Length: 159
Image (cartoon, rainbow, N blue to C red):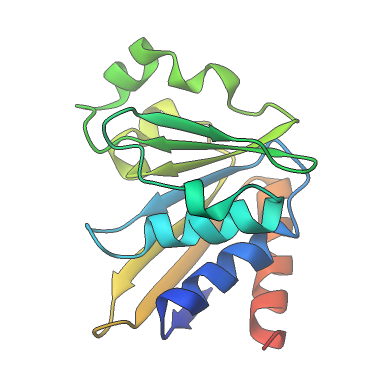
């Protein structure tokens, strides 16, 4: 599936749409270069989950931030500074993956993909202009494929 976002606000809106479909335990892998829109998307996820979106910041230096939501919390991880899957595993960041009371979003997930569960939703952000982003989505595992199908439908029908 591929979507186009024409502004940071639209990227946040897509995050809010996805948040409305989450049940807990999902893994959302975010891939893309610096400034591609990954953290902006997470801000929308946070807002949609009832977290305070203004508190969302890239966890590049702290590796993890946890935001309290209405029904689900948001674990926001960043693998940019990690050397690979072994360092991710040694950091214990993966300990709560699959926790049904939270959703986990991992920025730079491609750097630690071997340490992540196979079942996941992957969103790849590619700049396509000053504010425009192309977002390619794929899923592995029954729950995440179902989530992707629902997200594709909702993202294309909502203003």
